[in-house]
Image (tube, rainbow, N blue to C red; front, side, top):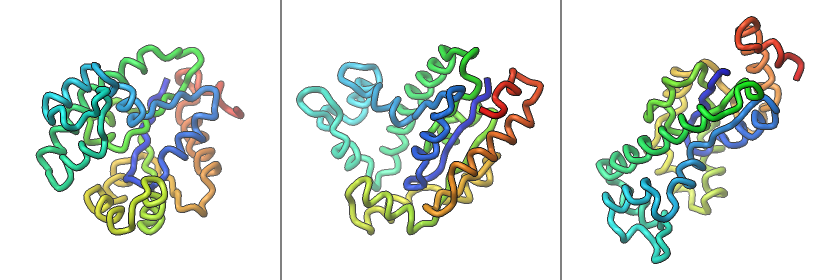
Amino acid sequence: MKIIGITGSSGTGKSTVSSIFNEKEYIEVIDADKVARELNTPNTEYSKAIKGVFGKEVFFEDGSLNRKALADKIYDNENAKKSLDSLTFKYVFDEILSRIENIDKEKIKITIIDAPLLFESGLDKKCDYIIAVIAPEEVKIDRICKRDKIDVNTAKKRLDSQQNDEYYTEKSDFVIQNDGKSNLEIQIKDILERLIKENKNKCNFIELEGK
């Protein structure tokens, strides 16, 4: 089984790309953001760790995380953001590795880790290949505004605090352009064909051809 990391800045459409990969019966997608949300339910170790660092004021009375309150805590506070990232990396990293270990490797030939902080968390070191998803800034801003219901200036500030596309492309094996015009299916098909060719005699990858 091969492990592929998918990463990129906010608004590039990583989830859309991952969903297309996930349509293949031999591919399993692990969404790091989804894993983090699942771990961050009341009384989990991850939730308790966040409360220990940021206090009970970032939680609702029912014990669920108040994401806006937490976001306000780390906004423009680099040390607070690093503290949150450190906790997230620890718990999410371990959970993702655990899920990979439990995948049916006879059925699944490719596991994809969809993680915006793939490099920062160290998850890239567990990947055989890495795909960077990129898009023009105006497209990313538009997507962020629609997705999170925020204004353009807020979306732009959010992007400015993240790495640019070159950061991801320089560290990746493949690049997918998700500008809303380029055909994602064709780009993904090309990547899979290259992977099959490179791994033709390894891990039964030849079985994937034509599927």
